[in-house]
Amino acid sequence: SQQGEEDPQALSIQEGENATMNCSYKTSINNLQWYRQNSGRGLVHLILIRSNEREKHSGRLRVTLDTSKKSSSLLITASRAADTASYFCALGEETSYDKVIFGPGTSLSVIP
Amino acid sequence: EAQVTQNPRYLITVTGKKLTVTCSQNMNHEYMSWYRQDPGLGLRQIYYSMNVEVTDKGDVPEGYKVSRKEKRNFPLILESPSPNQTSLYFCASSLMRGVSYNEQFFGPGTRLTVL
Image (cartoon, rainbow over all chains, first blue to last red; front, top):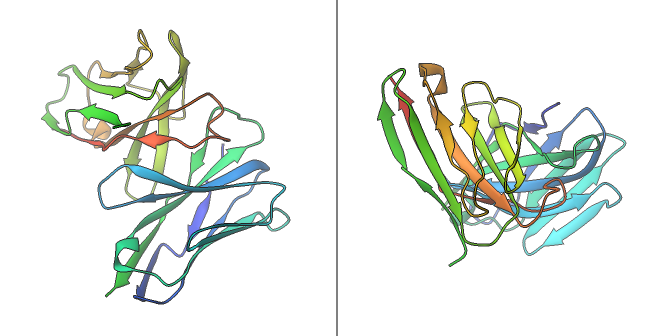
């Protein structure tokens, strides 16, 4: 199985700015999920986007998916210090209904 | 409160001393899973269970055992821990199988050090 690759590995922005992180992958997927992890804690599910969707919103989150480029982006608008966390994409591969593959994550620091 | 709990949260042990990390969920979820998280590698799945008495290997099962005798509990057993099993471990659950379509709820993590 393959892993998603997040880009950048680390991102530092000022409070109020937008944060964009990307996830690229190599095989075919059914859907893609994004999770957040505050330092040393469990992951929290943010959003799921299906392979037939191009864009999805949830509050200040906007996720896009381009299956032709095999990439997804997560945009956090008007960032807050509380958004400081690591963000992971999780791939739902076509061949595996019962598993997701997590990428190595993007570490986001929002400076007050 | 709906949650996934893990115990212990921190554990330091020595090579070869058998240990069990417990995981329990109170949401009546069918699916449970164990992951390990290592720097730069993201989360890798160790084992998962789609229901009572149904378990299957994930991507890195070597050196681990699991059991699912009750729906709420999914313990992770290290029969003979080695230093390369030093890691941060997470238990997760999901309402039903098919986690590629369903969100998982994660426990707080267990930081294991094997000397």
